[in-house]
Image 1 (cartoon, helix red, strand yellow):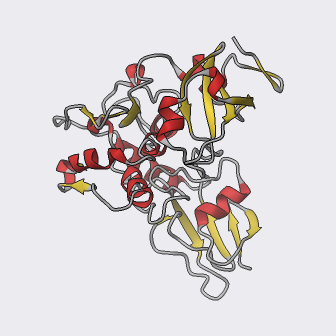
Image 2: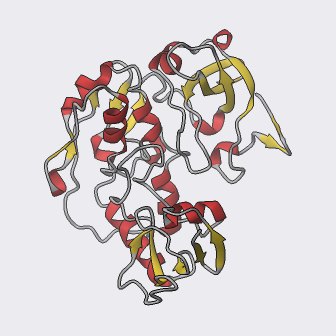
Length: 310
């Protein structure tokens, strides 16, 4: 099994492990951010470049450093490899540059965006973003589109991560949508309207790292930090029936799939569970979800190990 050292921390990993997954096994601040990579979606990664790292030593057999920064989600670990992530100024500067590009056309509507409080781009902007912009040209804008009765597409916020395309392709019988146009004209094709009939189409909301795809049944009803995320389950013939019920008192405002520490879903839920089952009697409430105590969602909710239900 190859050994890799990331920011001075050595770990032994399985053959074929990427630098990103090796960093996630270590944990902490050295884990590179990832906006397009999604471990449960085949083919994802390599598009946003936010996970760039510097490989200062290729391997024991070839100790030469790699000549440029590498996307950690696509670069495999080799025995004896040494990687600089959080500790290298060039890496930090490159990630800041990537964030600046992501924000070129992104609207500054965080106060009214339903993704506020659980947006990965917000986290990146706080860590690597600048207070001002150097962009002098007109930003691209798109009309909002309803892709069915449950999902709102706000293309102006889209960062072209391809997650929703991969998810619809892998959970639907056939691919019916994708990205059209190139460069500044690229957008999610309106053919996505044809895929909304899939029973698992609502999962595009969970995989979207920004507020481009939002739940129409939840839009503008509440902020996530006012709600209590509770693990819940029900007997469902279509999916696992394991979800998170976002509650205020005894009322359920929305249902989402369960995410891990890196915001990824491993058990996707069906549209029936997500949109049609919002009565408190529809679910068996297990208890509070495991939310990072530094997250805005946890504010004023946690006291020690218990959850305060309002």
